[in-house]
Amino acid sequence: MDAPVVAQEEAAADSWPLLSWMASCLMVFGGALPYVPQYQDIRKSGHADGFSTRVCLVLLVANILRIFFWIGKQFELTLLLQSVVMIVTMFAILHLCCEVQNTNRVSTRQHRLSDLDFRYFWKWSAFEDYLLFCFGFTVLCAVVTLLLLDSPLFVETLGSAAVMFEAMLGLPQLLQNFHNSSTKGMSVKMVLLWTAGDVFKTSYFVMNESPSQFWVCGSVQIVIDVAILLQVLLYGQDTRDKLG
Image (cartoon, rainbow, N blue to C red):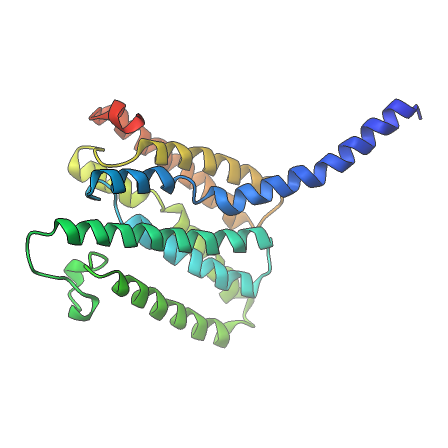
C-alpha cells in the first residue's frame, strides 16, 4: 500500500475519536442551548406569558424517567449526562419565570402546591413547589424502579414512557400559541434551535443504533417543531422582533 494512502487512513482514524467526542459534547449540552434565547427574552421583557412552562414539566418528567431507564438498561452515558443538564436547565427557566411573575403580580393571591387545586397545577407562585413536586415524583419513580427493576417489560415500558413524554416537548407551546392565536413572547430562535437539535440527535440515534424509542421520539419532535414554525408564519405577529 502506498505511503500517502496509509497516512490518509491513519489521519482519518485519528480524527474519528475527536469528531465522536465533539458530537457527544454537542449531545450533552446542545439540548439546553435553545432555551438560552428564551431565557434572555424573558429576562429582557420581564414577563413569561408567551412561554409555556409546561414545556419544562414535559422535559423534567421525560428526563427523570430517562435516568431511571438508564439504571435498568445502560445505554450511552452521553444521553444520561444530557438528561442531567436538561433538568438543571429547566429548573433555571422555572426559577426565572417565578421571579418575573411574582414581580409583575397585581393580585395578592398566591397559588401553591399545598392548595391541592388542580386548576393551578404547574402554575404555582413559588419555585420551591416545582422542586418539591419533582422530588416527590423522583422518589416515586425510585421506589417503583427498585421493586420492578428485574422485569424487562417494566424497563422497556419505562423507556417508552420517557421518550413519549420527550416527544411531546413542543406540544404545550403549540397548544398555547393556538389558544392565544399568537406566538408573541415565544422565542423563534428557541424553536429553530429545537428543530436543528432534533434533526441532529435523531441522526445521532440512528447512527449509534440507540434504542428505537429514541429515534422515534426525535422524529415526532421534528414534526411538532415544524408545526410551531408554521404557526409563526400563520400568525405573523412580531416575527421580526423575535428574530432580532
